[in-house]
Length: 138
Image (cartoon, rainbow, N blue to C red; front, side, top):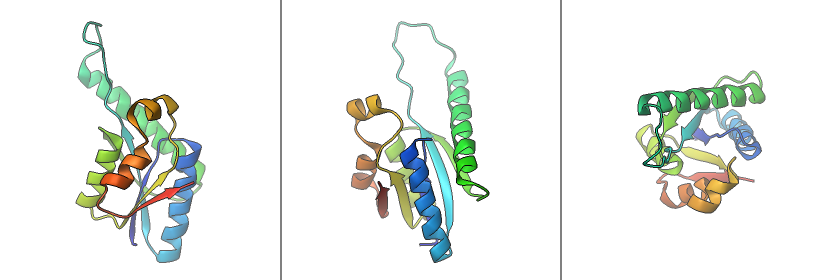
């Protein structure tokens, strides 16, 4: 387990998962990559909106801020980060396979309870679709 991918959204559960991943990496001589995935924005068809490129830039900026905050909460530990857009479980699963991660770590609860009710848990979906081992941290 040399390469560990951690899904973070800034929630307490994701911070706890990142800390557990760092413990594992330290014990096994591995390294941790923190990844934040912003889900697609669903917009009503008849409401004037900003250009899509502006929305994406804003979402990526928010993701970068989340990653910086998580790194700050983890202390002096330096981790590689990935800031991505798309369906979180699917993007994390694809990243784990394409970049050769040995383990994916995720918290058991995300930041947005409404999204969980409407779309399901990212952790649950990830466990079902990921081709790499997934550790769900409580």
